[in-house]
Structures are given as structure tokens and as C-alpha cells.
Image (tube, rainbow, N blue to C red; front, side):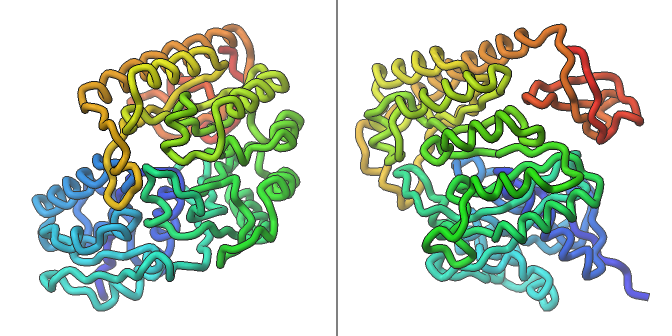
Length: 423
């Protein structure tokens, strides 16, 4: 009897990557592979990479070295954005056996069939312009909530970003297929779906890209009717694509949670122009104001980049003051890192690394204060918490509808259940 092969996964980057890793895992499990922990010995290791920052690239190389030390005979497969952008560079990392670009990641079963350890690394990739089609993915059994990919790629060309080069043009699933997937997820007992995409608000361009055939507002209205799903979250949506009617819909919906994540990147209109963002700070402030008018209890997360070329001390102060003035909940702060083949490389002056670090620290401190202030507003209130199933040293975690994290001693009967909780 042939021994079952084991496979282990490690995912870097965004929620969309997690949904894709989960789907790749199911493809391999269907072929007889047994999934195991990345910390354990496995016959095959799959690393799904990100390339938004230089740290993600470095982490990939570090993970390959770790595998080489503990399991030198195992096959190592690298996929994801880094694999699409720099396949030759990855293939030269000692220990890597297979590099799968954007068009090939879901053909992993066929590629593993004739892969042998010791041969030179095999690259299966194509130019990103040739990548089309849409593969629906969603995470299952990994977490209490499911990340459901409904859109991929991006037609925006922000001056700092490599994602269009790694993911290709904007393209989407159909509303009918998304609803079918949501119904399948509901049948599994999962209570919360997080909608994910590279440019989620641009949903509706069809699997080949091009013109909109449907739109995001139509999608969320259709999903609101799916039986069995109690919660939806919108993972991240550009402020210029988040419409007033969407905000009003979420405010009235019992299923879409009062929680938005809206990238800002800079509070300076000058820097937003250098970044080639498609809005000004005034529009951003309008979106936040409307959300808070209709849903005072709503959580709002914000992405910000510090140290972008041309961000003077005055421009950073403008960003800090703008964020301080907004009724937002938390920040995801990214330190700008130079990425090959981006327009931003030609923008001057360059911000010194020590200034980038100081600005990051200042905004992370602001984020902490914002989060504490937000949480304090709800002390004594009872809100619904969906608890995760993981036992973390006798403790369990969950999130309220408006994304306040709750930690409490583990109780089996609360795992994956929505509980009324006094904060």
C-alpha cells in the first residue's frame, strides 16, 4: 500500500491569499495528500507569497532555509505574488523545486505529479498580460469565518504598487457563482463570510476583465438574501468605490456588520497625487462622516503608508492631524519600501529610513489610542460576539459585530457560536 504524502502550507500576506491557500489545500487533499502543520515534517511544503513589502520577500527566503534545515528531502513549492514577479530569483534559492505563477497555482496537482527532488527548480509562469480567467476560492475549516474571494487583479496603477504586475487585470466571479459558494459555506455551518478581493469595489468585470457586467452593490444585496450566513464583512474597499448607497445598505442590513476597512494611504492631497490615488482627502472624510452618522457604533479601519517619496515633514504632519481628526477605529500602518518597476522610484526626495520608522511609530501610537477610545465607548453594553474554536492556552477569542476583540477562558459550547456578551 502506497504511503500517503503529506503537505504543509504557509501563507504570507492578505486575506485573499489565505482563501487561495485553502482552496489549493483542498485540491491536494482530493488527490490523497494529507495536510499537516508547517512546523511538522512534510513531503511537500507550499509557501503562498506576498510581495507588497520587502519584508514579505525576505520572509519567503527565510522559510525556505528553515525547511532545508529540518527536511532537506522535501519538495518546496513557491506560489503567489512574489512567485509571479520574480520567478527566476526564487528559483535560485537553494531548496526551491517549483515556482508557480499566477496562471498555474491552481494546477499544482499536475505539476507535482512529475516533480523530483534534486532537479533544478522548475518555473511555470507566463507574462501577467496573458493571465485571465477567475478561480473562485474560499477558506474552510481553518478559521471560524471564511474568506471568500470574489474579485482578483487591479486596473489601478498606484505609483507604489506591484499588485497589477503580480495579479493582472481586474476580473471577477459572477454574482450567481458567489451566491452558490456562499450557500455551500452556509451548509458547512460557517456563520461569517469575509468578502475579499484585490480591488473589491471594482467587482463585476467578469472573468476576462473589461467592462462591468455586474457591480459590488448588486453583489452585497444578493448575498444579504442567502440563508444560513449570519454575518458578512467587507474586507477592504477603496473610498472612491464605496458609495453612499452601499453605506446606507450596510446600515440597514442585519447581516452586513458595522465594520469597514477603507485604505487612505496619506492624509496629504499632494502625496495622494504622487501616489496616483483616485480621490482626495475631502472625499475620504465625507465617507467616514456618513458612516458615523448612519452607524455611530461602526468600526472603521484605515491603511496608511508612511515615508513615501515626497512626503515632507509638513505632509506627514498633515496626515497625522487628518487621522487624529477622523472618527476612525484603528490603523494598519505600512512603512514605504521601494519596489522594482514602480513609478515611485523616480519620485524625490527620498525619505530617510530612520524618519520612516519614526513616522510609523507615531501612527501606531495614534492607532492604539483610537482603538482604546473606541472600545471604551461600548463598556457595559451587550453586543454579539462570534467566538473562534481555537484553544489558546485555555483562552478563546471572538469579535463583536463592530470588531471589538473579546478574550475569555475557553468554553467548548461557545466555539464557533454567536454569544450575547457584556463588554
